[in-house]
Length: 219
Image 1: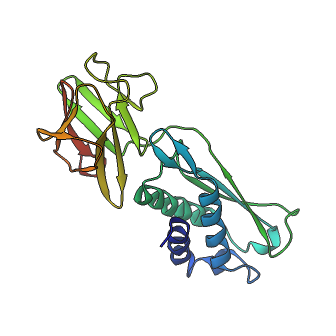
Image 2: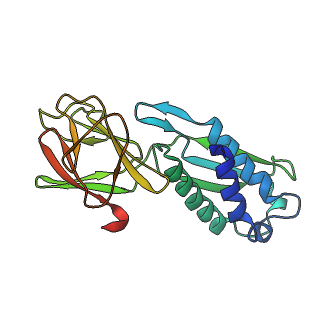
């Protein structure tokens, strides 16, 4: 199943049963789910760390098509999209958000879906705990290194500017080495360009710097 269809199916399941309480019969849940999924797919971009997509989606409907308060539905859509992005291993540059608005300029029975890339502060999903302190991992597909452009900075000379990449997909955290000068090690074993699974408590060594990997959900 491709990523767009995966998101569409997820949103369809979410909308079943609640969609009719918010929208009139002119619109169907499958139309909205399919549109968000297509826009997310079209908004994909390539980042140094891997694939990403837009994090903000504004759905605009004609007022006569909206029968109830869509705020709870918007929250549920946001949570579902966030779960999808994490499962698909996509990078977001800001917090995921789905907003429901109305505008009489939109024709009855139709709607607009506007995706945006809106930078903002992300909630950490994991952290690196070391003797020198704790480093938060907020973006998915986080580049770890000494460089100013690194998502997680380790200001140690032995650490390469772009040293390693950590990301999550399908409920699992992974790491690869980015051809660093002094290597990346997981529980004492050297990491190459093939993904190595990370679990809470795993010890990661970037050159001479050692940290314990902890998923936020396990903290």
